[in-house]
Each structure stands twice: as C-alpha cells, then as structure tokens.
Figure 1 (cartoon, helix red, strand yellow):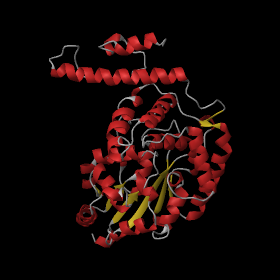
Figure 2 (cartoon, helix red, strand yellow):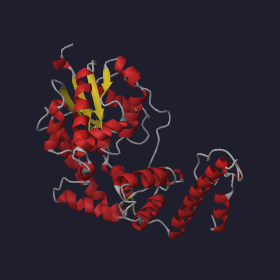
Figure 3 (cartoon, helix red, strand yellow):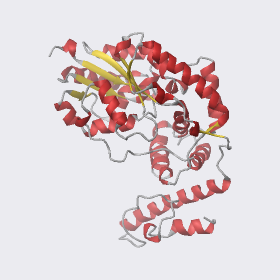
Figure 4 (cartoon, one colour):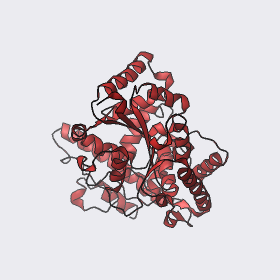
Length: 385
C-alpha cells in the first residue's frame, strides 16, 4: 500500500464525551486492531498526553527543548513505520489547539491523509462535567459562578480555556482551515439510556475499523463527582497551599489520590444545571447544530442527540447542605485514615485488622463486614446518618 493512501485519524475530544472510554477500549485491543489494519500512534495514554503537551506548548517553564524535539521525532518515526491502513491518535485536550499548534502536528504526518474526529454531546450534560474538570485542576469557583463565566465568554466570542472545550463548532472551524470538510468527522454521544456500546460503534464507523475488534469494559468507569463531593473538593482546594497546587503535585495527590481515590467512591447526588441557564443552553445548541449542518462535515449519529434534556436542569438551588458536606468530609477522612492504618498494620504484621481496603462507597451504608475497622459506621452514627 502506498504511503499516500494511509490515513491518520486525530481524535481531538471534546472533553467529557466518552473519550476515556474509547481510548481504553482501543488500548485494550491494540494488537487486534493492528492485525486488522488500525495502529495506535502513540501506543500509550501517557505518550499521547506528552505529545499533546509538546504540540500545545503546555507547561513551557518546566520543559526541556531536547526532550520535546525527541517526543515529536518519535511520533513522526512511529507514524512512518506503522504499516496499517490507518492510524489513530486520541487526546481530548487537542480540542484547544490553535492554528500554529495544528500546523505543527500536520508537519509530522508526512504523506498521511489526515482526518479529524470530534465527539460531541449535549451542552447541559457537559457543563457539570466541565465544572468538575476545573475543580479537579484546583479551581475554587462554585457552579453558578462558573456558568456565568462561560456564558460571558461565549457571548463575547472568546475562544480560550475553558469555553473552547465546550464549543465543537469553533474547534472544527480551526481544523477546517487546513483539513477538507469531508475529512472532519462529528460523532454524537448517544442520549442517556442508549446501549453502552453505541458510542464505540459510531466512532468505529467514523474511523473505519470493525468494532468487533475492540473489547470495551463491561462497566465503563465513572469518575464523576456528586454535588456534595464537588463542594468538598472546592473547599479543600481553597485551603491547599500553593506548593500543593503545583500541577504535577496536585494531579497525583488531589486529583488522583483524593478526588478519584476517595470522593468518587461516595454516593453521589447528581449535579444539575440551574434552570435560568436553560435558554442560553438551547441558544448555543441551536447555533452549534447549524454550524454542523452547514459545515459539510461527516456525521455519525444524530444531531438530535445534542438537544439538552429538560431533566438536566433544576429549579432548586444547586447548593450542598452543610450537614451533607460535613458527612462527606468526615467519611472521606475516615477512609483515608483507614487505608493508612491498614498499610501500617500490614507492615507491622496486622495489629489492627486485615486485608486490602474494600472497594466500596464509604457513604453507602455498608454492613460492618465491609467496614473492617468500624470507623466509618461509628462516625456516621455520631453525626446522625
């Protein structure tokens, strides 16, 4: 096969549109995909992220130019060596790439025919996810204030962070400057209640591989926080010293260790959007849908999937009660201390109990057999839960 016929599909997001689910499914099945003509380049999530960082000039103050050049060269060489009909590079933060950064990526692609895939979902569901992403990066802004900031940015025509990650029409317009519209693919996220594999099947059709070659997780992981847990994280962020807010420290200690490792395991109360933002969401959705319809892009799914469901909005105040915050905070602390105690116990031949920490929700009302030290149960009883 001539190199001119080989393709590269660059999946640029959007964030919180099932990107992790798709990436994990492809990585789990990389050998089968390669055997059927689809190569993953780069071959790991970490390398995909590192490449994005270099392409987008992220964290310039702590990067090494020689390492950056090596990252770019490694990608170009792997892409040139990949023998399949198509290759896939998936990294959701590429949605924020500007014209110069897009050009930098295209320069590495040789004679590949470059396609761009954008996965999109309804704005209402994406707003709460976007707020959580900001909290998991150290933000202290509450949801109503965050939504007001986004609305101002959108109405002012600002395409910076974080609005760019909620504006797929703008993202596509940037790529359309250098990639023909027929090679720009829009994949809509199915509405709630659709089969769990529907998104994967749509993505596979856009890229051109057989979804039967991919083995997704039986139960896709969910890293979403509930309203109460998000409020706990927001308050913790406000109390952390600047040193802990350094990006690489925060990501390890707070984002992965505390948010994903502790708070996500609690019983969530779904985050809804205040009703006063509903008209704005519908206005933005109509404009984005019109852009998709007139852009000449290849579509997988239905633009009807972008309609904001009425149940995503609420007339109630989007506020976590102080009692809820206290309960979640104490339970989180109990979980952390229990884990630490069990680590010490294992080192000292199990003085206070045994076994690995149970993978459970610390607020779920589990039986004492699921709470080997009894700490969480006692705390819940003391605060009246």
